[in-house]
Image: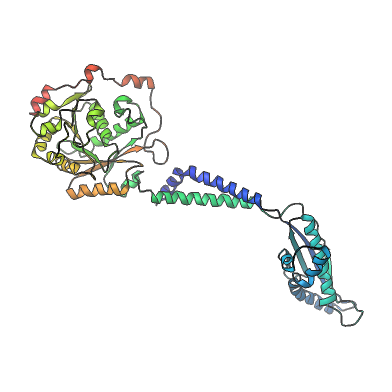
Length: 482
């Protein structure tokens, strides 16, 4: 993955990441609120060796001795010798081990100081215990550990409390800020991890980069998503200024520059599976091409589940199947649509042998005159992974334009469709991605606004009158097609 891929993943999943971040912060704050506060009281002791009337050298030796002994004294603080008197004196309901777990003794390097700290849930109790431990320790050192040899003599080691413990005003634990920060970091890490896992497990097509991993053929266009597509499939006619209509015009422009060498511009439009928008793409592309003044023939080559007649509002009882079996002439079956030079050949009745009809010599004879007369011939074909019809038609035309739906078509399905075309020796002209979001990291080329006046757009969209919507026969097409 490149850096832009990681940015896209974060951008696409930012809501989930933000929610988990907030939950992590709330979880850290909640955990901190459930913890009982702990208070730490500290005191400091100074250990010295008495050298009355001694020379300077003796003083140095005494200080060195004290430093050596302090290290051992630290280990004595948590022993029963020191803590038992504290428990008895204060009447604590605990054992030596329990009290020792709350007492900490340390000594700074190269000093004769001992720091004693006690942790307790009551700040006053913590200070009392700390001072009691310090007094008990001083007594143990002076009367037991360093007991003078001569009877009645004082101990050569003196332990002095230099800083008595006082009740702390603020708890030392829990560290609310640290717990909240830690919870936020955990939530953020979980959110990013789930976003990455979600991306890895998601095998659907989303971006141009996904297509580049499957095929090196060009992306001819990206069709913007429209939640009202089922209600108004012919968006180029119904709302010509919409972002989705502009998507089809971009596709039209790219198609005009595709394969500019001589020959009939006959193209098959198919998809890997059903419901990916191939029929609406073919119909809208045909309308967009006709807007330029080109002569366009739209053929419904899906003889299994035809849709073009319904989308175009035409009678589909007589169509391609009748032409292929010789019942009707192709010029008589063509129906004019709209004010431009757009003619539609519906599928006709559903036959029992669609693949045989589409691969027959009759189909070649139909496509020949159409390719000579019309500037563009678009054939809506069935999905590639379900039947072989699209591959059969692709052999008789310039090639196949493959439609894939963003967020729906799986990568393995598109890979299978590309492989089936390659196996059949059919030219894959390019791909079209439908259902692209107009916002977000997976958007392609168009915003969610209409460029220009809505009033003008409504006036510019010609509504079909009853006369225009009525299917027509074109005598000139009939004569030349024959």
